[in-house]
Length: 224
Image (cartoon, rainbow, N blue to C red; front, side, top):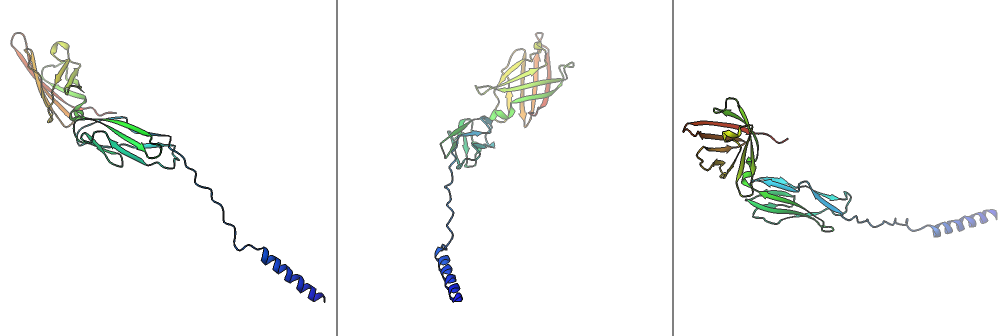
């Protein structure tokens, strides 16, 4: 009798356990991914001066770093002057000005870089020159070359005496790098740029009719 009661009790427990056991485990409820919006965008350059054929890559930094969608599109305001590809690579085409704009897909945040393309830009800088003839007490002269807005260059000499016609010259430089001054009664100079060097030749005429011919040349100082 006790044996029958035991088996009945065991059968009831089995039925209850089977009835209460779920068919499968409850799936975990996943929370939807939180969207983090873009708040800002910046570029590694705000202004560039290039010569035709130059290339440079603009790097866009999207904030916050954890933004969900950091896609950026690129556009040039003047493709005839400078173009930009989908990776921010800017290529200078011809003299002129252009604005490169990077725009975020999320929020349409914008950052811009002004690009000036100028064939003269490669010659702008400071040159450390050695003087041959003319100034035995001035064996070296520093020459600063500055671009002007009227397509001319300032060639400014430092360390030369003012009465030696050595202050400032305004010249037109052709695309091959050659230049010459307007003729003056007391002095005339001409020269050219070759790669990273400048060559200048002077002819200085004294009031008495005598003249002194000398030249100097030197390399552009590298930017620090």
